[in-house]
Length: 114
Image (cartoon, rainbow, N blue to C red):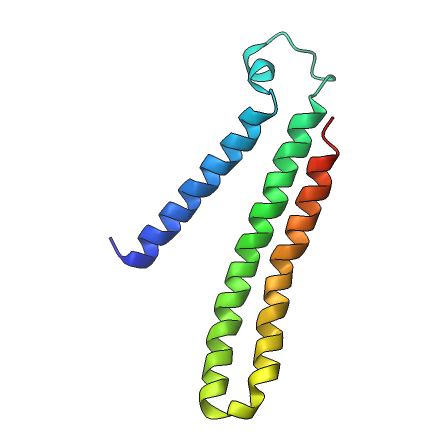
């Protein structure tokens, strides 16, 4: 198995573990076990926890893709023109800000859990 494929499989597996940890940490086991539950009484805490995990996970994966792409381009630009360091660094930092925004939204959702 190639290194890149193995990395993506491990990354996906880790995301699955994190999602299951969030799901089972907010008392949703009983919601899954009870089949006579009324569909109108959905557990708000579980929805907030899952949406928090999705917000953080998707923003971090998006930031990783953005940093990979812009970082590669920034290194190539720096090899040709060293004076363009600030512009290249700024573009990579904007990709990193994506992950921070997702983390802020995830924390805001997590604090709304009753």
